[in-house]
Image (cartoon, rainbow, N blue to C red; front, side):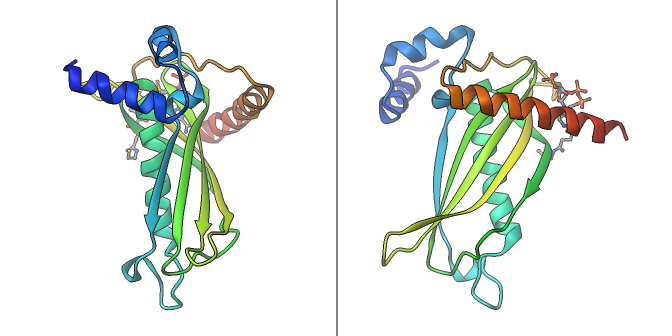
Length: 181
Ligand SMILES: CC(C)(COP(=O)(O)OP(=O)(O)OC[C@H]1O[C@@H](n2cnc3c(N)ncnc32)[C@H](O)[C@@H]1OP(=O)(O)O)[C@@H](O)C(=O)NCCC(=O)NCCS
């Protein structure tokens, strides 16, 4: 890997408050923090419906792409979306607001990963933020031939992370049942 890419990786470690040594020690596994992704979008007129609210389809696209970035960062692979469980629309997002998407891994299997994506709308004038959506997406890491390929284990440390992983396992069982039916 060229030096400039290694430097970028360390830069990313610093941005997330990690010592660079942690990233190096992660060859056999990675923490959710190491692949966490935050993206911010501005809701432009072309992103909205006739009422000036963010289109659901546009938001789903942003959720999918942000989730895929976290899964790719964990696996260092191209990933394919295999399941999107559900997506609640709790509050409309208005034209001119910022949409902040936070994606992080909750569980990793052999080749698949579950990613949670939390979506916040930020009003630029007041700076206030509100949670508008939450989604769980399953991605599969693919090799150069488009076949599923193993991903590093997810290193879980905090009670919150362990609880989220237990919930993820229960969701996975439901998904696999659905897949068979
Ligand atoms: C991704 C793809 C190559 C995987 O092939 P596959 O034959 O399903 O592979 P497998 O059965 O070995 O499953 C691979 C992993 O995905 C998991 N998986 C597959 N379908 C799943 C589903 N609906 N929900 C949850 N997990 C699923 C499997 O449990 C397995 O996980 P594990 O390795 O961690 O145990 C294939 O499903 C595919 O091409 N799907 C279409 C993807 C797509 O076009 N997405 C939209 C654009 S990105």
